Length: 358
Image 1 (cartoon, rainbow, N blue to C red):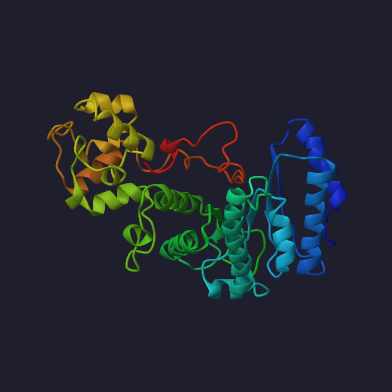
Image 2: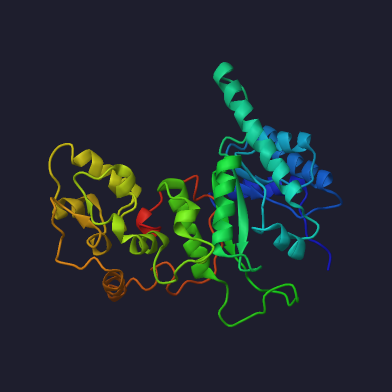
C-alpha cells in the first residue's frame, strides 16, 4: 500500500484553514522517513518556514525531529518551532533492537543533546540580545510506549528520571500499546485492550518526579518493579512508609506536606502560607482543598487526628478501598483516546491536580 503524505504547501493550507475556523490552536507536525532522514527533515523545515514567514502563523508548533537528520536541519527547525521532540519509543536498547532495529539509542539521544545545548546557548543570547530569535522556547519532550516490550514500570520511570536530569526535558509522554498487527515480536492480542491503567500510573508517578520531589527509587525497586493497581503511587508510598506519619500540619515542612496523600502541591503551598496567620484545623484544610478522605489517615492538626484511626497498613488500605479508591475515576469506563499535545502549554486553563496523584 503506498504511503499517504502531504506536501509543505498542503500542510500550510490545511493548518491555516483550520486555524481560521478556530478548529485548532496549533500544529503537531511529524513524519515517517521519506527517502532519507535529511530529505524528510528538509520537507518539515520547508513547511515550518512557509507557515511562519509566508502565512505569518503565530500559533503553537510542536515538531518531531527525525533521528539521523543533520544538525543544521535540527537547528533550523528549532528556530521555527515552539517545542521539539524525539521519541525514545522504548525504555531499553534491547527493546529498541527488537521492535525498531532501524533506530539506535545514539541516533535518538544525539538530537536531544543538540536541542539541550541549543537552548542553553539561546538563553544566554536572549539575555545579551533581547531581540534574538528563540530556539525551542517551550522545551523538548519524548514518548515511550507502554506494554509493547517486557520493560517494568521501574525501568521506564528510571529512564524518564534520567532524561529529566540529563537532557532537561519538559515532559515524557507514555502511550499504551495498541495491538493492530499480528507479529511474533509483539504481545499477543487479548480482550483486555491497551494497558491504560498502567499508563495512568506512570503519568501519576511522572508527576511526582516533576512536582513533588520524589525519586524513582523511592516509588519502585527492582524487587517491586511495578505499580500497585489499587492505589496511586503516592498513596502506595505512604502505606509502605507509615514511619513518617502522621504529619503535623502546623509544623511540617513543605517537602513533607507534598508526600501526604490528599495534598497537592498547590494545597501544600496554601497550607504553608495560611499557617503563618494562625493555627489550622481540619475545617481549614477542607476549605483549602485538601482531599480529607485520604489525608485524614496521615495528618494531625494540633496533635489530633480527624477521627481515631489505627496507623496500620492493612487498616488504612482497607478503609481507602472501602471509600471507593479501587480505581481512579479517569480509568473507570475509559476508552482509548490520544493524549492532548497541548496539555503542557495549558491553553485555556490549568491542570486539575485532583485528577493526578494527590
